[in-house]
Figure 1 (tube, rainbow over the protein chains, first blue to last red):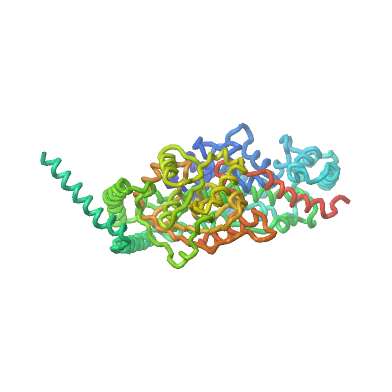
Figure 2 (cartoon, chains in turn yellow, red):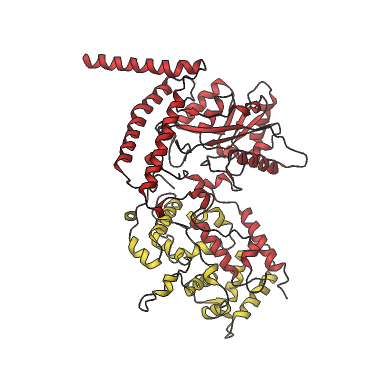
Length: 195
Length: 404
């Protein structure tokens, strides 16, 4: 939405990003446009502050965790990193399941990867397990000061107990997946970009 | 000698033409119909250009009107519906899906950020600056574009620059102004009232002052804008503030109250959004102006983007480059609606009153109404909005007996 047009040539590594994420050329252009709009100081990358400026994201109870998911290592996210996260929310098309080449890595928007994205919103220290303590912390993020510590602990305990199968007091990714097997993940975690 | 004589002759012919055809008629309030003819030709040309573009591009790549459709498919269900998981409303691991989806949607596209950049046009209006997605179509179109550039830079620009210099009033910027609706003139603001309008650019001021005199309230600027501001103060009393001083709301309110109490002073013109928005929406009206009391005269201003984009993106362009863009547009066309005066009702607080006026202006101008603060252009959203969301969510997971 500026006065310059976005050409494919402008996106560095455009082809490899397309192959990795599965976004169409048009979608990628739109996202690049958006990336540049968010990058207010024209740095070429986004910082946490750029994302925090988005009003609708700042009021989201999980806003901080979502922002964090863009910065797996360090303080900056470049365009490929930006698109990689967004690729998790690409709707599952028929073509993805048909042309499954066993040698190629799983597409970023597969059910498993969508679940994994949700999992790591809870897994604060990225150790592959959601401990009761981590569950408590994320819940606290989501409810602010509205709920007492006791109520929150009850909720956290119940949730971990229900999902925990091997009794280690934490929810592993496999247990997480199992407890959500009936959920229509593909539909709930998809954002369709209109052409 | 020859060259100088020739130049002198050209200049004097030029000035005579300008005086004769533009200045004198406008001084006497007579219209020669030149603007109307110009606009007719312009509209025909743009229509032709649109048809050429649509013929030229394949069906799939025609740019949709992104202002209304948006670039992602939205599911606007409220929090409760979106969160319904396997078991009703207790906290679920799957709640994270709803919030992460909403969060990512906001990252891809949010209502506010897009309001601070120029509106995308459905069809190109032959100005390079609005060319977002249009490729080379045909030689004829390019020729028309070249002709357009010549006309805009070599005819319209010198014409407007000349007018700008000639104009004694410091606010003459010199673009063509067309299209004020005459029938709502009965509601023009009177002395002692407060006029509020939605804000898109400093030209709003120009437009309103061609139809009446106002005292202004606004941010002190530097540069060319500052010169104009200081000069205006010499002519009649205005109220200029530092934005940091604005934080002291009592001071502002006091000065404004003093101003309207004096019946001899001109009505005050305030833009309660506090910043320039791109004319597709109206953002939160700051309650300060509505706490003063007095009669509020709302005015809705809507620009027609086809002829030129009037939005001043102050972080992108300074005043002089903004003026240059204005002077090289085709024209500035806007509709101004004066609306019946409103006063604060019994039991209504300033915020509710502000929202009521904002709705009225948005409806009249055909703009979207947004609850967000225009100040988001520069600062982060206030924590109080996040607390509201957290409250809603807490009510759901705790208030439904999930403790047992």
